[in-house]
Amino acid sequence: MVALHPAGVLCLPADGVAQRAAMNQGDGFRMKRGLTPFKIGLSGFLLFSFLFLPYGFAPHQFLPSAAYVESVKYYALLTAAISAMLGIALMAHLPRNPKMETSLQRLVSVVLAPIAFAAFSHMFVTTTIPLYVALLWGEETSMTFAVASLEHTGAKSCKTSVRLAGMRTLNDKLCDLPPDIQQQLRSGSEIVITGRGTHMGLFVENARLAEPAARP
Image (tube, rainbow, N blue to C red; front, side, top):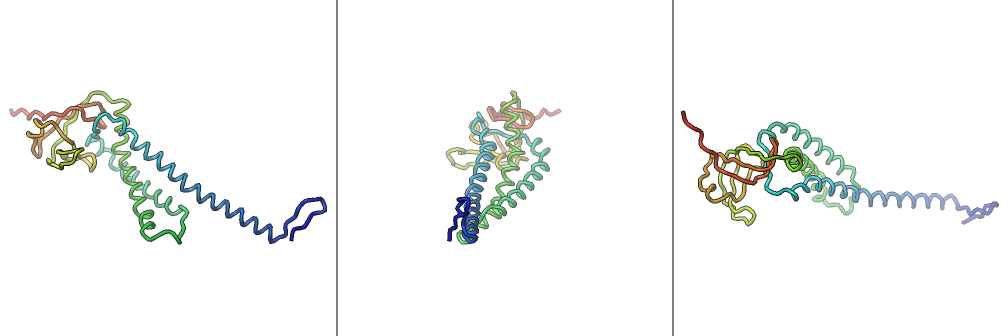
């Protein structure tokens, strides 16, 4: 029952006050549940934009140098491990609804999400950083790569490809080289790539077959 205080203030009974407080807590909890996924999604969008935006401005295919990738491999692995742990912690604190969540969804969030965090952070160290450096401070440079194998994929974006030795996955392929160069390549051949870049990597603008070493 609602009572009127002598001073004219409307007073609620104790049970009504408790009920109202519970409703307020529920509203706050629902708001928190609604904002948390939004913040996580926004953070993920900004992160992925930072990782992949430079690829949209890249004039040509980018190749990090094998020497750079080798020099930062332990930093890349450490960054990937830390990112995976952060991904696990993030998924553990994400609001869940046990009634609506399936075992497959839990598997995706607990296992695949940390793997994605690790993969993107590893890619950031080995590829995105040298790409940014090449875009901002690159100059005309050249690098020599060894051929591991030749492939004919038939895909529209890459009908013929050359696998490069000593390079990591996703950075080990050259697509659609000129036919006169392609025909001369064999496993173990060397290609000289020229383009804008630094010692960390370069954009593939031109390619030619390396001249054989002069014999004494």
